[in-house]
Image (cartoon, rainbow, N blue to C red; front, side, top):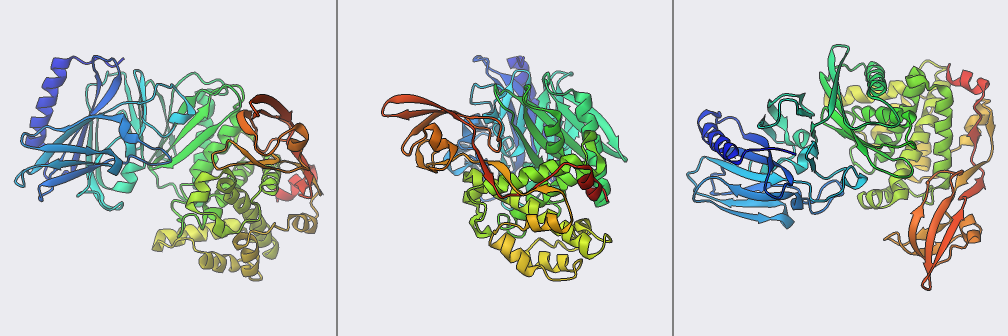
Length: 569
């Protein structure tokens, strides 16, 4: 539990407020002082005191996102918001995401204080991934729901800010680690874009920090808890290898500081993992049980780190319209990078297994042939099917292009050369991915024009000619496979069955239109783990169990020596 002497805390606060007005340079836009606080209710909190130039108009707004990253009511984590200057009035308007401060026009600088706490009682749950976690022994918070920003200093997401962070009152052995440094109690960020500052992770407490150097650049792993599926040394080894080979691929070792944070989450059955690419970092939350294995960690690291280039350095011109690129091509280069470099011993058999899984997933998707225009902000974030579609489709499209380029150039070029061309243009001129630009640059490495191929399989969304491609290359494959098919559709609230495919296993097992779905255990994409449901019909609870399997004409590569030799070329 945070232990703070109230008198000492008050005295220190007064000294800091007085000192900031005397010693802080006027050019320093925002100074944040963060300290631990535990009041009589014994709830751990982090107190944030910020000093900054007041708005000359006499009204200053301090902004805080009440809704962000799929989370609502983030202001519920904020308490005790007030200014420390006399003659000011503070109005908190949580629904609008701002705090309004009225003050004298002659006031040059404002000192504003608020406290941040974890508003729910759950510990290490998946639901807390994107909400502030403040516990007696640690904290885990993203910058956008940690640090408020004065509106007149950060109206524009590209606004450049000068920021100082002072971590005060924490025990000496208490880890302070974030996207900008490790165990630095005073941090200075000069001319940092607001967007970069707000896209950062801050952790503290009982995190274990491992430091390595990869070709002269600092790399950190911050992990906490007792991991069941792997240990820290294995994780560090995978991180080192992944960063080195990816940076070698892009010929980019420019990032001098990078960190990965790992937070264990409690999950009784199944495995789950989430990764969020951030400024100089990415944050992961991983289920800590026997269902999670190290192979999933290898995938997660390679996918999220690949986003440093695909999706970040090489940006989409229209975010959702090009998700087939930023997510799909990231998926492809994740498995290709792992296989080519045998990260954690995974080779071309892994590559083929992942290709096969993506083929099955795309074919079994109820929206597998939806046009690209159907992938919007709303559908991507609200629908599991649309959320996964650009991953599956884009990954297999990238595979097809890679094969076409290597075939046309007789092995002289590959999709790798196209990707490096994209990075060069984005670095030198800020070029973003548009559909015409993409087609033009791929065509430079082909004997023909992919315009029709692109329109057919990306714009229109028709099924890719994978069977023909496998056959043309004399690869060994099975023409059909079993895919996951849930067999029914739910309403928008994912509670009521609105339709059932009468040819599917779900119907044979007893699922009917109008059923209310209670408890459920569904391993999406698995053809070996049964679907288990409790349906409620006419006041009666009905247990349902079935394998969600259907045979379809989707090809699967055989994991054979002949095929492995082909991809090793």
